[in-house]
Image (cartoon, rainbow, N blue to C red; front, side, top):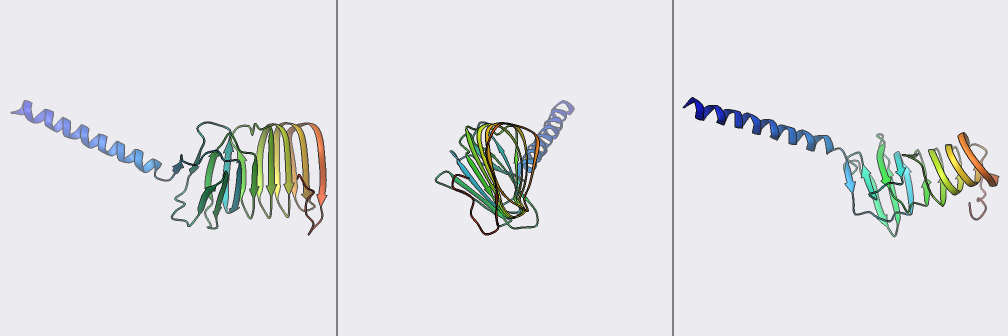
Length: 197
């Protein structure tokens, strides 16, 4: 009788332990949502209190690390443009991996960071309000526009670099190697940046 009950007790204990382990794995991943169906992103627009990480890795996907649906945040993709916005006190954290990304525009208190090198033939960055960016490049042509109190820190290597910025914006070149500066203009308040910026 003992030989029949002991294996049943061991089996019950093992099954209980496995069930708790799988529940823990689900709980650990319940704070993020992977949006695998969003592909071919060539432009990102970020508004509000968002921290965006960009990378040139496969697979192409969008990972949202908060319960954005509970925060009334927006993550929407249409015609290659990904729009992300959140206006809650807690930063919405999003990681976008896209080989086609060519442009990022950020507004309000958005923060843009690269995860690895931004390795592009052409890349445009447009920052407004109090948006900040910290990017490492390995790119051929980069155009940057900084408005209002926007701030940016750049590192890496760029062949052709152009920048339009307002007087209140801040730029830090932290080991940025530029082969050719093609444009460096100060934007006056109330005026538009030159075409191509």
